[in-house]
Structure formats: structure tokens, C-alpha cells
Image (cartoon, rainbow, N blue to C red; front, side, top):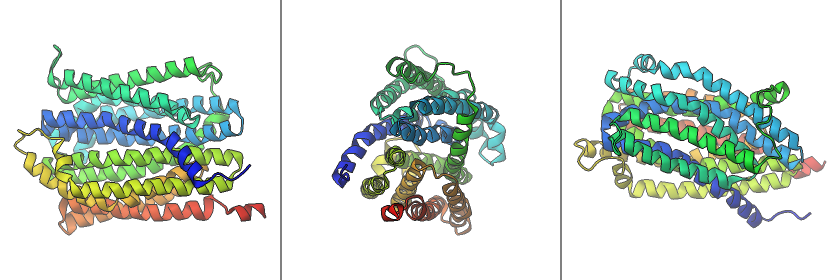
Length: 453
């Protein structure tokens, strides 16, 4: 069989990647619409959602490690013709995610004490705790959705993932409009309305994906005898998934630490930080979708024993991600006021101050777009070849031995404020990107000629 050309790799990556990118952007749009609609409701409600949503997302992204472990395992099993492993791995991914979700509930339901301990403003902490008292329960269906999406993506059934996520965005907007502002005869609930909408939307998405898997994929029998433990498969999911979860925690924890530090600067800097984070995260979802493509393609190549295909595919997906990152830099520097202004009511008295702070944060964010893309792509490729423990160590050291201390040093010791905090993020991400790419090319992927010898 002839070696695929770079053009063929590009077609395969875009064919798999565009629906995945769309689904990630759509998934993030749920949080984005929460931020936009709460920003139009009040700056205080937006700041509370930023704080509460950050804690939820940190725990959610950590628990998603088990779901992301399912992706390369299913891709490799399907590529090598081991159909039974697809079922076993997915089931135990659901088990591991459910256990993790239950363990996180006390932290979210008791979040007011957590925020007080972190030095956040009492009024903002109280509103954020109200938000998590409802939205915290959504972590269980949200993690189940992640596992099913990972399985479907690994089997290249990405269209349904996209359509279910788009439907969830539309449903979230309608319920937010009703419950945040008190429309359609519903009570005006503010931040609690956004929390209830998130819970309802995640339950609906889970139900839709379960129904699809049962109806369209009966040959895999994913849910048959779901209650039966499969300790061997659960162990493999756990061993691959916990380093991914801790890597996710290291990165998202860094951004959460930045949110805490921005909270020390006041409500307006925290609100501007939340908006800037939403804007940058939209573009991060593009890279995350490409990272998932890298994981699936690398897992498939590993299942086939195709080292040349693995290397060539990695080069192409890195080039696509790098191009997106450079375009993002241009947008962030060209129209920052427009991007920040979308999240604020024209009549808000704090609008000008929040925009002024947000513009400086987006300028700092432009500096780390390329390195952020590099590190998330390196993680996706490493996970595809089931190399997760060393990248976890690299992430922890880069983000917490460098990123967080530099953020504090620049933001508070040197007095740069919010931009200094974000420049510290850039330093941690840059270090992670360099070392993770070196790890992938230098260790994870042997040269074809070395393999032949």
C-alpha cells in the first residue's frame, strides 16, 4: 500500500476535524451564552458566573481525563479489529467518570466556604455559591456526555456529536432567556436561572446521545449489562485517564489561579478577565478539536503499526493548528474593543472601564496563541500513542513552577496588574509547548528507519 500524501492527510484531518471543532466551539458556546446573557443582566452576575463556572470547569476538565482516555483506546481497538474492546473501554469510561463526578459534588455544594478561603469578595462568593448549588449537579451528565462523544469521535461518527451540541446551544439560549430575565411567564432568577439551564441542557444532551448509541450502534451494545464491572478494562482506563485528568487540572488550575488573582484586583478586573477568557477560549476550542483529531489519527496509526503515517499526520495537524493561531493573533490585536464589547450592555455604567481592561488582556493573550496551540496539539498526539505520564509531569512543572509564580510576580510584585497575570500564563504555556513537542518527536515516535532495523 502506498504512503498517503500530505494532501490526503489534510483531507482526512479536515473531514474528521471540522465536525469536532464545530462541536467543541458549540459546547463552549453554552458557557459563552451564559457569560453574554449574564453580562447583559449585570456585571455582578457575570463575575459570580466567572467564579463559580471556573470551579465547575476545573473539576469537569479533570474528570474528563477518563473520557479522553477512551478516545485513543477505542480508535486503536477499532483500527485493529478488536470490536469487544470498544464496548469494554466505553463502559468503564462511564463508570470511572461517574465515580469522579460523585466525588466532586461536596466541593461544589460547599463552594461558598471555598471561595471565602480563596479571598474572594463576600457578595460575589455568595452568588457564585448559589450558581454551583444548582449547576454543580450537571457534572454527572456532562461527564457522561464527554465519554460518549469520545467514543463516537474515535469511531469517526462526528456528525451526531456536532448536531447534538448545536441543539444544546439553542436550548440553552432559550432557557437562559426565560429564567435569567423572567421571560415567557417564568420567574426572574438571574444567575440561578443560568445554573438551572445548564443542568437541564446537560441532561438533555446525555439523553440524546444515549438514544443515538442505542438506535444507531446496536452492534456495540454499549449499555447492555452496564452495571457489570469489568475490572481489567476499568484498570486500563484509569491508568491512562488519571494522568490526563491531572494534566488537565494543571492547565485549567493555572487559569483558575489567574481568576483568583484577578478577583484580588476587584470586580471589574475579574469581569474583564472573564470576558477575555471567554474570547480566547473560543479559539482554544478550535485547537482542542484538532487535538482530538490528532489523538484519533495517532491512535489509528498505532493500531495499524503505521509509524510513517503517524509522523506525517502529526506534521499536517500541527501546521493547521499553527495557521489558526497566527490568524487569531491578528484578530486579537485588530479588533479587541469589538470582541470585549459584545459581552456588555451598551447602558452599563462600567462598560468603558471593563473594555479598557479587557483590551490589555487580549493583547497579552495574543502573545501565547502559538505556544498554547503547540502544547495542546502535543498533548493530543501523545495521548494518541497512549503516552500520558511524562506529559503530566511536564505540564505540572511548566504551569505551576513557572506559570503561576511568574503571574504573581508580574501582576503584584512588579505591579503590572491584569496584563502581568496573563503574561505569566504565556510563560507557563510556552515552556509546556516546547518540552511536550520535544517529548513527542524525540521519544513517542521512533523514526521509520529505526523501526525497520
